[in-house]
Length: 358
Ligand SMILES: C=C1C[C@]23C[C@@]1(O)CC[C@H]2[C@@]12CCC[C@@](C)(C(=O)O1)[C@H]2[C@@H]3C(=O)O
Ligand SMILES: O=C(O)CCC(=O)C(=O)O
Ligand SMILES: [Fe+2]
Image 1 (cartoon, rainbow, N blue to C red):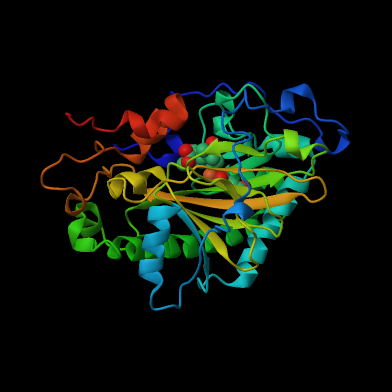
Image 2: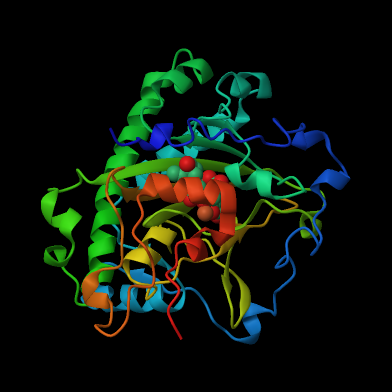
């Protein structure tokens, strides 16, 4: 029986150094445990000004007939892009932002009633990657995988059903959009459903699973020395991210450094995840990204991490592998990959790389 996403860390407990946050609002100065230096994250300050190069993440209009090739180009160069005219109703984006804000405004004791367990995926807590860093991140998160009903009942004893409806509708739209984006990107490489066995075998969205990550970055007294969410790549095929109207998301490009993704009202950010990197045999780059914080405005984001069903093995599409070379990566399920990442974090992708004979 394949492991569902909700059970992926069963038997793989995560011992987070700090189980819950301080009262962010009462702090005038950054405690030492929240003060980051380049020692805590090698790329902390690696940032020649993006203005120096004028480079910006592409904003792609999905109604543009050229969208597929623009998406393909963005996946190869940035590993990310923003989209407009994506078909997700504005009211739904406002609804998920409202839900996220309401959740994090709850008293901490209430939020902790729905705390994520050491072996669980869903619930309230710090990001799983926190265990890899000596310093704490200036954020709180809530992960939803499977039905949020039990957790939401603890958070909102009266209103939980309304909030569950919003999540369900949001996830439905995201599923469809993620699948559409994946095929547009693959089509740009000449790959169709015929070329991928698991896509051929499973109709529609039967082959997909997802996690919804709600993030809150409170106002911070010393943002230059704090870190909202440390640099990471997502394990997904694709991640679709909604951010409120406060900047903070940054992408890393080897040739430029950190580039801030400006919030564009109504648009969504799309990140290439590690599994898409593998599927495309490294042609699409999973993007290293992080979230910085702000002295005057709190920030919210909602990441929809989308991947294949548990028993689906992801491997490079044969069409994208030269007949004279072996595939760059071994095949892996999402579960196997998440467990590798839980132990090896940002080295996970290189751990499943095939090493070519020189
Ligand atoms: C399916 C998953 C991907 C994720 C780990 C998780 O089990 C649920 C949360 C996801 C998230 C969101 C914030 C960043 C991230 C690295 C993390 O710590 O939790 C991702 C994980 C991932 O993509 O590996
Ligand atoms: O808050 C953001 O902009 C980034 C969030 C993120 O990277 C994640 O949830 O995986
Ligand atoms: Fe992420």
